[in-house]
Image (cartoon, rainbow, N blue to C red; front, side, top):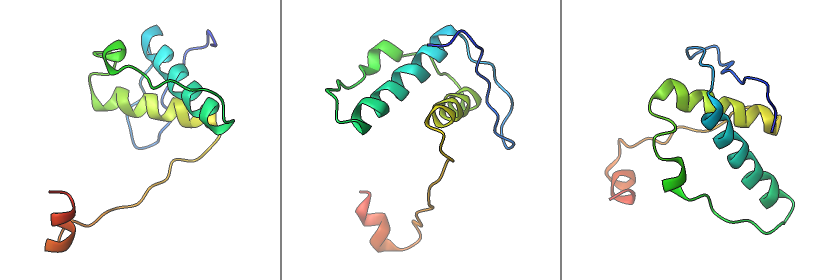
Length: 92
């Protein structure tokens, strides 16, 4: 793990400097991704180990930004419309 302070670099979110425990979470998430990518034995993260580490949206986005930066990938996704009864039933 690096000693460097990681910050959110997202232009749409507040800049947040991650504390040591949050940087450990970034490392754990990235390592889980890396191990899976290379077909190595991987154990799921225990949610209780990370309880209270991220308590607000700005920090959650900062953690996400830091993981994506380690992956050297751009963040992407898609919007799911929930306006039709059919898509609403899929989530019930």
